[in-house]
Length: 143
Image 1: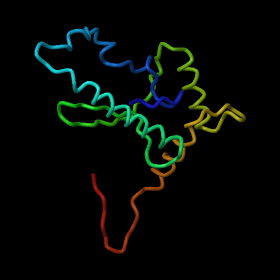
Image 2 (image 1 turned 90 degrees about the vertical axis):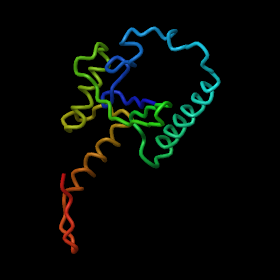
Image 3 (image 1 turned 90 degrees about the horizontal axis):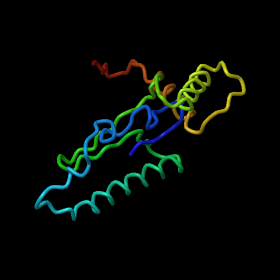
Image 4 (image 1 turned 60 degrees about the vertical axis):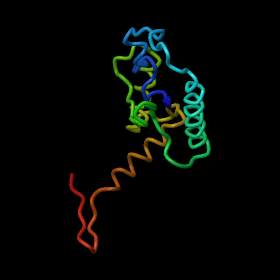
């Protein structure tokens, strides 16, 4: 599941799926004596996660996953932030990146804002406010 916010997150040209870039033949994934019955189940699980992520975004609750993978062999759900590539082949992506950076720095008065940009700004402000604070128990957080 990959959430796309133009200019702020990677597009499919910035970060194409691994199967596409590796040149791997998808037909080789089918193996002898392996039941393909789990494929619809896996597709159902992924579709449910996609709908959940969409509802979180549209209804404004929870944390919207920027990227959420699913490894059925290891029961593993990796999550990542996927930032756009400044060398992206898509000129619209590069243009949106420049607009986002200008909007983020506040230099572009009246710049067109794309939905999803304010979320990032609010998250960055919250992270800055989460600096270490004194507390009455003397608890500290160390890396």
